[in-house]
Image 1 (cartoon, rainbow, N blue to C red):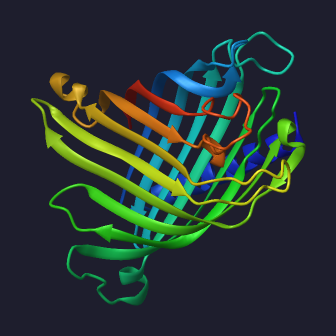
Image 2: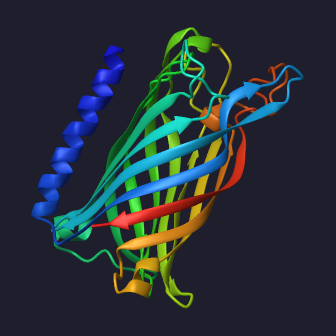
Image 3: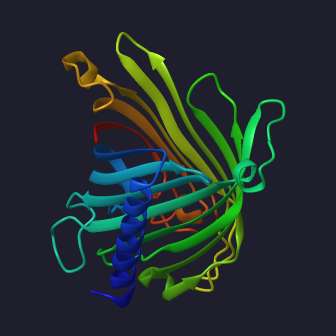
Length: 292
């Protein structure tokens, strides 16, 4: 196991403990264990004819969000298992991956004691956070990214809609790119939403979209990255409410769109099939959630 993999695990554990401690002193919190199955993810794999090979993935997540006097914390860790089309290094079994996200929002109205409301804006927050991951396939990706910047929180009748513009700095590892990668600081636009509605049972339309600008070559392949777009949109139904367990058990469907995954330009001239369209994702998925 690599030093970076150990670092990711220690970072995840530290934030999980911090979130747990924060939750005990929070104004509100929600923690859930989630399961997702997506049949057409990407492993940057092509067949002998150069056609993209879809990889099915099972994903188990621990997700936590809580609010406190000055803002909110969000933490999510995914454990991903690929099918055999995306094998672990030196194995015929599917690769495994861990990926964690942490976000902290500090609301300016709470910090300054002055209202930030104007028009459709409810508040403005300063967002900091990180992404960290590790995968055990041949490429051995180990992304680590930090971000910082403002987030506008919009006033809705119910639910939430947040729009952030952050500075994003990423490092990674890629065997195919010659090892360690150190990317330039890029602009990242982040949209997060959750809107409750009624569909015979309580339901929630939620998701996120991130748009990351070009981040240079990573000083590895010498190939310029391009703008990357990742969208997850879900409709989740409160099926637990049918058995008197409101806000506890959810089931639903979602859609993932990932264009220019990891910044690889799908339309770049001279790219082999491994990069050109092999990383593109446009696929539905199913998700189950248990909240506690």
